[in-house]
Length: 241
Image (cartoon, rainbow, N blue to C red; front, side, top):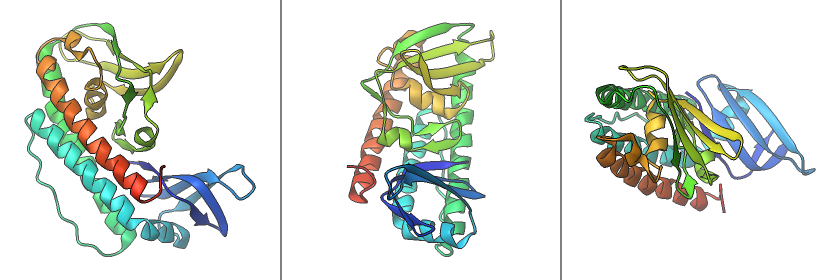
């Protein structure tokens, strides 16, 4: 799992990067931001390097608050697909190991709601379809696959069309993608929970038929509620304006 999020300014290698974004996995921390001379700079750090530890430690409260909200989002969506998730508590300690364990737990929560979502998909039997749905004014992509993509919450997709393409009868296989004009901004497996989060933000998701008519508005309510909380945290920590 990768965790992508905007940061405030960050000091890497003696260079202060503003408008920074971070990607964290169990092996690396990747930073991109605007350097002192106004050009974009990138840094790839091993997760256990001193610089990576410093960045994670200095942003620990911020990242932890974001993960708290994301966990609540996934747990709430889980109830809508008949999955009850018991949140695991993690003892605070080494900031790197704490964050990695939090990400691993979140990944497990995603897998659980993925099971519930796939059961619903396969019970509906969509068949082979190619449908274009109208997205909301802003489409918030909290997850892409099993990765956390809060860069697409801080900068949501505007004016997007949500396309559903399935390949098989019976067991549903296919993709969900968000297109703006000729550009595909996001493409995910329809069987992943991220597709449920994206589809819930279509204005006309009822075109997919029952039980989506009742499911999608409920999921969307959770998405919008927790996205607003995430944006509030980002503003409070200066990650976005």
